[in-house]
Length: 276
Image 1 (cartoon, one colour):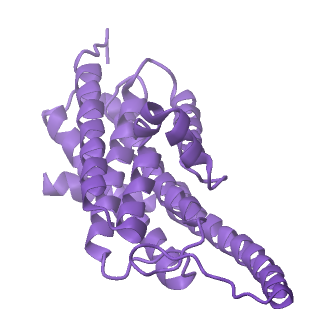
Image 2 (image 1 turned 180 degrees about the vertical axis):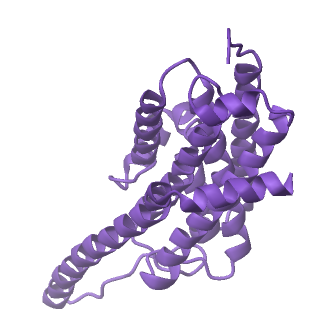
């Protein structure tokens, strides 16, 4: 098992395109968001300062329950971390192709390998989770310690747990996408990318109030969105300090993981080939 995990880890690290979308792209997007948000709030702050001086009152800064100031734009950065976790499905999607004889030559060899396919699937799942957790942790660290757009002081352990659960749901989601149907790898790649980006947008990646509106008008759909659940978990840790809601978010993510892996099990298990 350890040998299989090490092999899959080496394969993942060698895929530069995967690391770009899972690490470089979120960091670049976060940096662009930081510049945009900083310029907007600097201009807004100057306007408020002028108004305060003219009208003779002091500007009151909004603060969270744990004493940290927040602007409401944290939703975008939390959704960005959720997107990073879902992009871990790129590895999961590739791993699923490596277990199907109709999608890759390696899949054909693995189909007749004496190694049980469940063991190979578990090794690929664990390696994908490990790589994605490292990428999500790096993006979170960049947003917290480099740009300072989010605060995780004293909650590093909970943050890593959320990244771990988010990485697990992202990897499982990618494996599920790669396992359904008899579509080509290109079609599944486009489908996974569109779904991941759509869920991140609904979680507030582009509009900070997008997640709030979705939760207000379609709460069930919001709870079915992994990116929104990950974002809400970060809110519970970094803003509200709500352990009850955090536990609920983690349970939802765990339930999603079980459902996706169950779909993968029955999907691949029933797949047969006329000849290999």
